[in-house]
Length: 267
Image 1 (cartoon, rainbow, N blue to C red):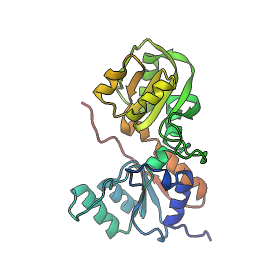
Image 2: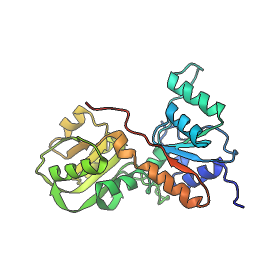
Image 3: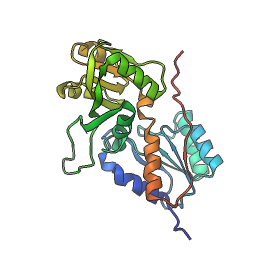
Image 4: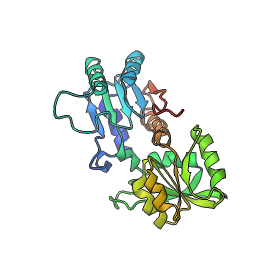
């Protein structure tokens, strides 16, 4: 008979890869709601938690959700909050569902968001983009990474390839589309804070999400910048969660990848 797996066992295997002390000061990673001593009946893995995510967990008989983004990001000082949070908390507490977030701690993990994104971007020889806050911890990577393409190509050719790999119709960028590139900097999510690092490290192009108009203009003569989308650059971390849990808990089932799409639409 297999040993019962508890919520805390799932948490422990995730935190072996991305310890909570790696999260940024502003973050709210970790167990947000639930009892870690409960036996885990199943896990739904997602990027973001919505009411529909709770409904999916209930329908599948799961009592744990592992997300990348925390559904409670800022502190709640009064029991008066928006409807989305109210609905999530009500369903989670009513159905005894634990919700755990692995956010900037997973962004900072060597085998986390940057690792998954590097596969999609087709880069190799990965190195750290930002300096490490924990130099004695080899698996701490920090935000973003640098890699090299197998062979030199043009900006236009490369971005067309990335559009296909990400399954998106457009990429916002600035720079000469015929410029030849090989050294690529990248950061999943909102990575504008690392533009200077990418320039200093000699990157030909830097890809991330949530770039602002003035990010483009102030760096136009220094580096090619491309906004590949926040959701699109991080959505592959769900598979990483799945792999971590299934490897450590090989006799544990079921695990479900939530079928979610970017809620921000283009027309």
